[in-house]
Length: 165
Image (tube, rainbow, N blue to C red; front, side):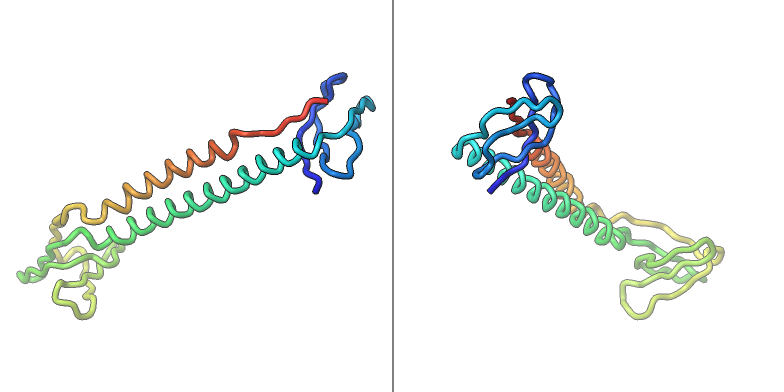
């Protein structure tokens, strides 16, 4: 099976893509016509092995970066309800979470459940009470997996096959 590699002609120094593999008799420069016999079978096998490792590392990079994005998404979604709010409306204090906010009103879900209530921002007093960082693990994991993805990307692009003829 033929494989495409970058090759540099030793006479005119032109860099070009050439096919090497079984059945290909010679490597010829398309610019100056310089030619040499094709690579041996074991050299082509090494090139195939390097290309296969490069593909595997590229897939690993894509998987790691996708995992990092998913973990970051989980962090954002789980932390939406992590800030508890104390709402005071007409003297009544309710603890719960803001589920939607606009410029003029909010939707509020109380701890006891039930339907969300809608309030005008001018009529209520809000005090937020952070509940610690119970879901920070997703953020730290997304950063760790992202760094691993960058490292895998560096490894995937680290080995290149260049033939000089």
